[in-house]
Image (cartoon, one colour):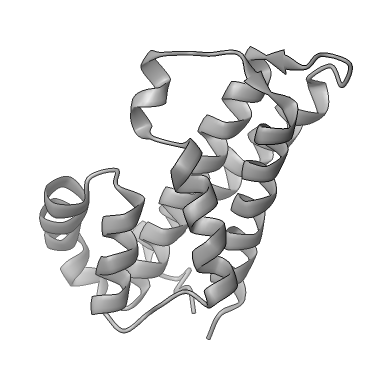
Length: 147
């Protein structure tokens, strides 16, 4: 369960929500007739950022807010950085794990997203953007509902 009363958890959750909303708007704005576009690339990038942020919020929810600055330094800026697989492992070590369906969604996002994408825009197929967005949306909703 997300502890949205914790300031840092709320910040990560709001960032995740904002990234996902922006991805949706860009996906709807991308021309359907176009097989590839840079807007679709942005959808993939923002969808992945959303997943990273919501998983960080979920991770921090399991700890006292007093521990958050240390965890951000040691886990997010140290061990995990922007690696979704390492973030999934950190969650499991803290007693939270994804359902099999959500692990599949995470694998799909991870196969198409990396933080380094921001430096190398590419024309991306609409169906790839759609699949990554849907997987990200499902992960976002799952984390928001899991107990």
